[in-house]
Image (cartoon, rainbow, N blue to C red; front, top):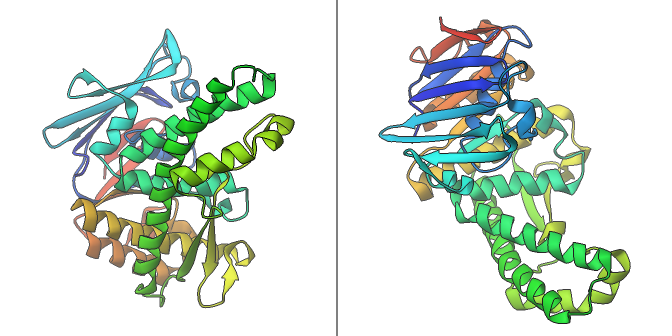
Length: 357
């Protein structure tokens, strides 16, 4: 499924925008600060989560506006939308076909993947970013993963509050939270494990002549079954009490990525190699979604063309064209996209306005 129309209201630097789109390549070019990435961020909000910038909802509302914002999209005969009211700027609301719905239900309608310049640091920074990246990959294929992650985190926050406050007189309360953590944590851990295995199989067959092929490994101490997690939580209670938080569990997992040919951890690779590893993961994941959900994901590629040499840039466009689906790209120079198929739609972005070239 693809976005056939995108509408924005008071979002970032857009007071009002209605954009008619199509399957294939959608190219947005313009100067830095014109609002190109804002469009991609808006599309990313049509999936569960905090969007490609992971920004606070309040920051997405247009400056000097009423304090609210809305993002809506037409998907064939289905309309989805999300946003906030001025009275509750930190509370996100979602509607599907005019009916109020949980935000996590967006994953039932649209699979969205993205690459941004900020993700260049994915392999260099802490495990939390890689967990979020992996969870987004899982959500695009298994919409229920969003709800399981949310329920696990809610139970963990409550357990941490009890541990930090020392309110452990009623052990049955802690027992109940441990049961919730084990239930939802096992679902989260198993889905992550299945995703890493499925991607690893695809990557073994991937063409490494253009982009380096990664090897993936889920570092979670193999704590995945409900019984295993429950037993671990009970054994760790003394240490958790001392620390005032839950020290072990799926919230501590990490995604290890290696450069296959070099047998080198991704964080030891060059910036260009790291970007190539990310490209390979995203392309393999897009193929996995197409195979299992029988629809291509929407790809959001922010400023990726500028960081590739002409040969690899043309090769990337060829690979994307072969796969089909809808691809949203941004760049400062239209010349960066000269190798994109003629059927692509090219838009010029300038200070909150978008025009078809």
